[in-house]
Image (cartoon, rainbow, N blue to C red; front, top):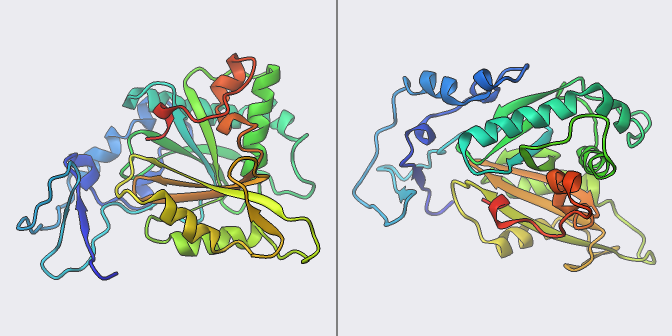
Length: 304
C-alpha cells in the first residue's frame, strides 16, 4: 500500500483494539450480555496508540498518517473462519440491534426451525449445533450471528432462504419483529483482504464450465454498514468479478441467477454467493413474514 493510513474514530469505542475474545457476546444471548457496553468497559482500559495530528482532514472519521507511515488497523476484523449471518434491525438504534441479534439467534436455535430446515439441507451436510450473537468490531448498526462449531458445512445461503420461505408461509416458530434482514455470510476477512477473500469464496462457487455450456448469469452486490473506510462499488465489483471464470458465466445485473454479496461492516468484509437474491427480497425476513410479497429492493435504512 503506497499511502498507508490509519483511521481515527470520534467514537471512543471505535478506538478500542478488539481481539477475537472480545467479539463473542456469550453463547446464550440475553439483553444483558449482548449489549456491547460490557466489552467496551474492559477495552477502554487498554492504552490508546499515540497519534500524529499534524495532517487532519475534514471528515467525521478523520484519516491521518502516522509518523512512520505504517498502517495501524482501526479495528480487528471478525475471525476469518466464521460462517453465519449479518443481521440488521428494523429500527436504527443500539437497543434495536441488540434485540434483532437476540431474535435472529433464537430463530436459528429454535427446534422447529431446525426441523423445517431439514427439508432444505443438503445430504451429508454437517449441521450447526448452535447460533451465537457477536458484536462486529467498529460497527454499531448491525450484528453477526455465528454458526457453531466453526467446522460446520452448512450452506448459509440455503439456510437464509429457508428462513425467508418459512416466514412467507407462516412458520411454527415466532415470527420476527425486530430483525429486518438476515444476510448469509460464507466467510469474513479484513477490509483490505477483499482480493484473497474473493479468490477463496468464488473458487468454490464458480467452478470451471464447458465452453459449450449455456452461460450462467451473475452479478455483484456491494453494501456498507458503518464501514470504517468507504470503497467504490465499481472497484469492489471489478475486483470480485475478476475471480469469476470467463467461460460459462456472464454478467447480468437485471436477472442474475447467482449473486455475489459483498458487505463491508466495521473493519470486516463479508462475502457469500446466493441464488435468486432479488426473488427472496434480499433476505428481508420481516417483510417476508408480514407482507404478501417480499420487497424486491433493499430499503435505504438497511444499507448503512
